[in-house]
Length: 212
Ligand code: FE
Image 1 (spheres, helix red, strand yellow):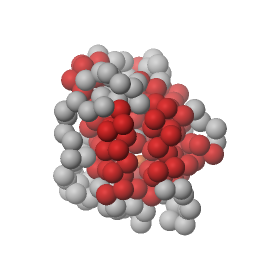
Image 2 (spheres, rainbow, N blue to C red):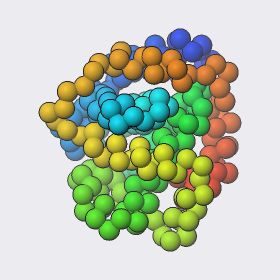
Image 3 (cartoon, protein in one colour):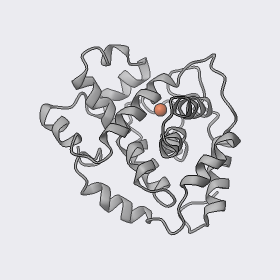
Image 4 (cartoon, rainbow, N blue to C red):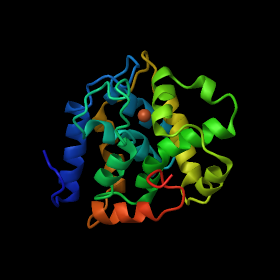
């Protein structure tokens, strides 16, 4: 398994496809769907609703941070925030531009935003999303919402969040991971920013979950 060494675009896509086919079989939070099913449902919904290819990839990979750590499946029950949006950003920024990585980085902040902005949104959250919300910082304050809206990709982050909330349907039929290989190929960049550069960028980005 690749850690942080430099690999080319084709190898990167192979690694991502393999991760989704081998490491994403665990349960998605408290839901009955697996991480793989959740990723495929979110990406399929993005595709079906006419989202641009970068958003389809963001939807497919938004929780990759959950499967590149070794905390297991019940970390939220143990009061641990796995910071998967930060891990996902670090992992993906090696190969993808901000159209993919920024909505991923902001999808947890987007939940906190929507909980504050839409009174009925929080009531509709799944049990695991509600539980993790308490670890992730509760609904945003008015000031935090203003900062979030200053982010270049805040609207995309909200759209990704809504896809995330829908991709937990036990009966949904989805294409296999391979269906999304062309989408990955369309978005992967060679010579993308390094994880540390992306991290520095995030730390100085308004609305970043790393600084909220
Ligand atoms: Fe998710």
